[in-house]
Image 1 (cartoon, rainbow, N blue to C red):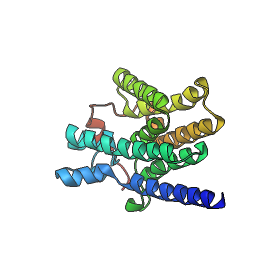
Image 2 (cartoon, rainbow, N blue to C red):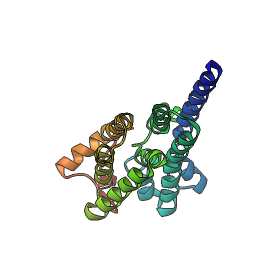
Image 3 (cartoon, one colour):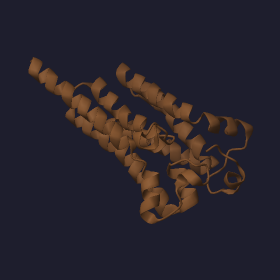
Image 4 (cartoon, helix red, strand yellow):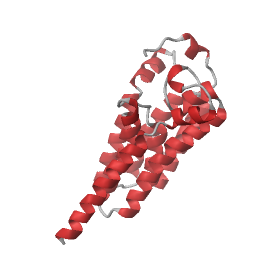
Amino acid sequence: MQTNLASTDWLFAGMALAGYLLGSVPFGIVVAKCLGTIDPRTAGSRNIGFTNVLRVSGKTAGFLTLAGDAGKGWLVAWTAAHALDREAAVLAVALCPIAGHLHSVFLRFQGGKGVATALGATIGVAPTIGLTMLAVWLATAAIWRYSSGAALAAFAALPVLAALLGQSAVFQVFAWLVSGMIAFRHKDNIKRLWQGTESKIGNSNSLHNRSYPT
């Protein structure tokens, strides 16, 4: 029994570390280098995620970034769900790629907003909830055309959906943690949404006229 527990602990630790390292891979930068497009850290909002890559480098780069960022979250979470027995361990591992994206070891612990990676991780452990969140994101983005607002709406829905669908207390803690991480990362966007100065999807003018810290 002790041997089995030790093996499980080592598996958990290994998956957590691998999840963080995979989450740390900045696909927005990797895609830009591979396609020879603009480094997202030097243009637009200087964010490495889908929305900024889409704005500064075009649809191909944007959607490859989205696939990479969402895919790494989904892969880690889905693998954990099938390899680990304890729900708490599965959800802890699912948090690791999100933490890696937010605080990448390859970018001096800087990173992106975490939306695509967190959405992918949620789909990996709770497909119904994750896909519902995706629907909320798409609908909100289509109606109001604020990428940040759509992300905030989707992740505000996460703990609500967890409660309505009768998820365990452990999952509800996971839901609140992820929602809080995304909201905190969007604190500047929240201010701009409140002030009415946030850029809409498809409108790059305000991005190019706004100054950003290096």
